[in-house]
Length: 150
Image 1 (spheres, helix red, strand yellow):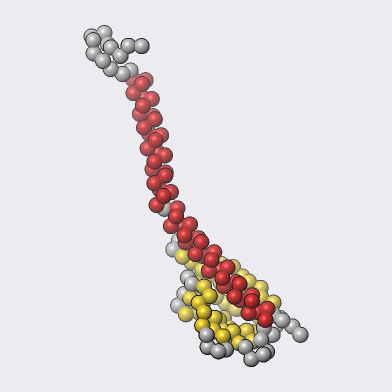
Image 2 (image 1 turned 45 degrees about the vertical axis):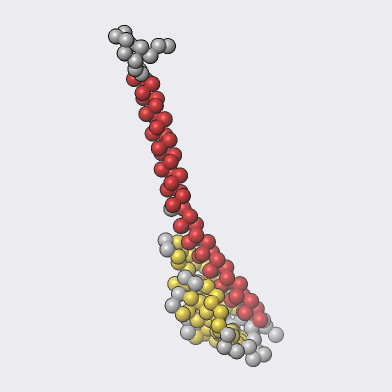
């Protein structure tokens, strides 16, 4: 196949040019998608991991303290678990940080990015509902904490 025209000029056919333009369009589309995922998706993924981590940490602390407790006293953002042995674990919302304070005064940040927390009890169980949001990602969950009954 010769690249020479009748007049002796070199060139490409229209079909060859269209094929090249099609390949360039496909490659450009792939590159744009790759760059979008490189810049946008990690931000969303990091926010999702932060939300999941906050909900998991809060659940672990609440269930641990609830399982050791004999009574729950509602108050503040959430309330206090009482073990019956002089230990009390109080949960409160300080801005967007869920804090746990024990009876000796030690405070631990249990979860960050908490938008709301509510605690209700029926005497043996405590229902704790948490809503956490980081950037565009938010999640809400309810934990059922069963207290020790003797």
